[in-house]
Length: 101
Length: 206
Image (cartoon, rainbow over all chains, first blue to last red; front, side, top):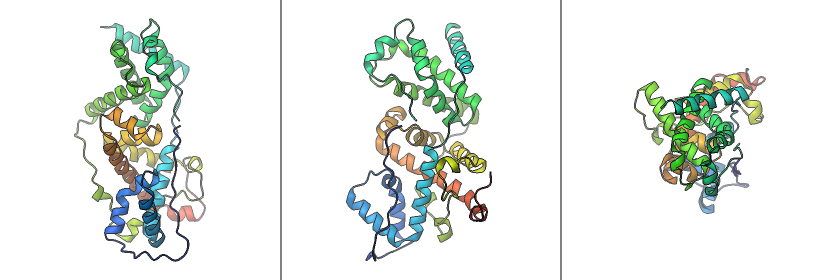
């Protein structure tokens, strides 16, 4: 599996001086960047800004946690295996179809 | 998890030897079946997709120039075949997912949760209801969003590789992936709320 960094939201320690404008531009703007944040693709200054916002906005913090959980569940979704009989039967069917023309 | 598979262009001549197709099939059938099952969500369609993919690969083997990895070439064939098969089956045009539809409009909507706290992903997915909800949410996604999600988050490919397979740039891949994740999150969390009390009082129902 490709190595992935999973960036969980971190609370900023200490009181935040960030002025929170929940329900307006900040939260919506954050929502647009959450996947890039989770995938650790954003520049460090934007990550800092997001962490500051999350520290001041419980709603966004819950939202990003649930998005992170979604990604984690997708990454762990089990996939069934083929049996050796299935592999053999499909190979025969493919070659039959290929030679039928 | 990605299977070990021949990847280098230098393997092209080997693929075109008399037993080239057998090698190609043997080395990649499990990889393509897993991808097909994740895309189709059920066994028979996944097997049909695998057969269609390798039939097309068989026919195209002589033209394969080795410009991409063999696995990327097969993922591309499988993705195109999947779109054709689903279009035939469902017969309806794809709809776009708009980011605006995922912007929560109320505090309650913002705070919807997925009932997995304290569980490992493997433990959470033991729960039949959650597993089915995840599968249904993925199945409901329009093709291009589902493919981006499966290739990136389940097959573990880079955005660049996914772009090569889907014929779009990285930016488009990231946009589709983000919308797909938001869609699945909304589907799962909406269900999670229904049973939130069950979870608090002793875990998920299985």
